[in-house]
Image (tube, rainbow, N blue to C red; front, side, top):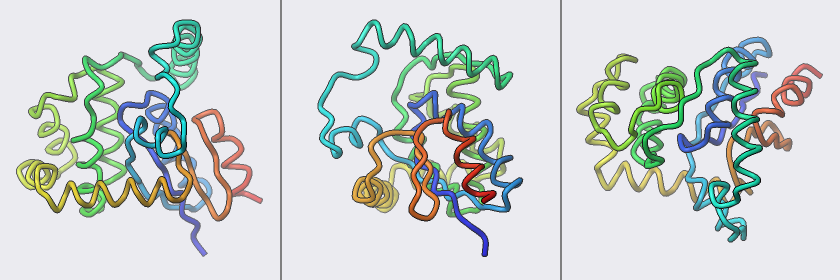
Length: 195
């Protein structure tokens, strides 16, 4: 029976970007499918009872985190450029539209490349439209979904279900009763899937 990797991510997360660089190949190697599940990290933290400051507000932590990000990007041989803003909610919602069109992997990969590889401004709707078009999605339909009460409702429901499941950050990968948090847990995920 094919196993599913529930991949919880937020386009605000550079570590989710790094996980997405490797996750599709890992899934193919292990015969799994990925279910892309966008969340909102600040909201997830609060839902889990974490009211502490964001990483950006803890200067010693952000310094180490930045060095780690650069190391991971170099290891994975991918560009890493901080985006012009962290306003990624529309992109997260758009991932649900892409999932409904069986284009989640392509959209998420292309979106992460734009946001964290190139460093675009996620607030720019032309970037969102361009990303949709690049992967063969109808940009008008995608943007309509993102703006619609139905699309926003689907995104809200997806987030609520994630938090009820225990999602507190991203990236998180769930398989069976196992949880793997962080791009640095992909080796553990693969070992579990190959057992």
